[in-house]
Image (cartoon, rainbow, N blue to C red; front, side, top):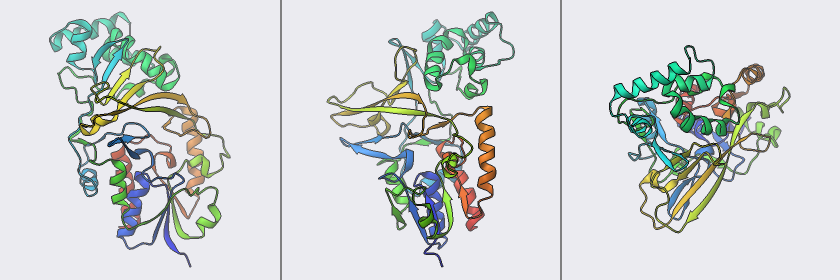
Length: 367
């Protein structure tokens, strides 16, 4: 009756993992994507011999052995370590916050001195139970570091005053009283050699993929092709925004090729003052230890999402959480459709968590 067993909407990580598992289980699979390329937001494009992260920096990191083994089926990973630098009005600091940061900020040399300085600043701010992001940050790193390295960056990122943001946003901020400047405290970390697009292409090897196909504009005829649909687009868009829009933060990129081999000497430099309009500059070649004669940089600008923009970060507040639950109830009633991934579940997912979620769903579907 149907031409395909599974129609998979979206060729990002969730869709690609499901497509691979379905094909390996002997299912007839069609993957569609409204973009002209596969790989969703981890899409990389080669420019001047450099794999450019078109939708922002993606650094793979995980403690999940199953996920690590899985991605290594499709790519060889290098040993890239994420050690961003913070630039505050020309002063450079190590991120994550560690002994290099504390030494530069206060001249302290020992972990005891650094902890004492933070405790002193926390006490003078009178914080016992942090009620918002500002208070949480001061209780973690003190007033000086908050003012220089957290406040401006966070307010640019979220478009809101730090006093109006929930404390939990910053709870996973790495603070270390060692000289370890590896941002992700993960067992496995790296970048796929040759770029993420190559990795996703390997995942989709032998599977039919149609690009430039908008599912929601051609829903009726596409649904008629397959018995089941795995949908990884925005959940509110699927239902025609009938209950209202879920909110996101979006990001705009200005990418340029520079006729020099080295612009900033690091993959990521965060601009933490409020006056600099961009949040960070990515120099893509350093993700793969590039030796090319030119370099490619991207300035990132955080913005409020509006329909038509690319949705990046779900706004995890009470209103949006309640609205998502209403959409989820509608989604649960759709017998033919499985909703998954960052947009389908309105959830901020790290890459390894998306893969783990998709693998769990595939075990449920295909055993």
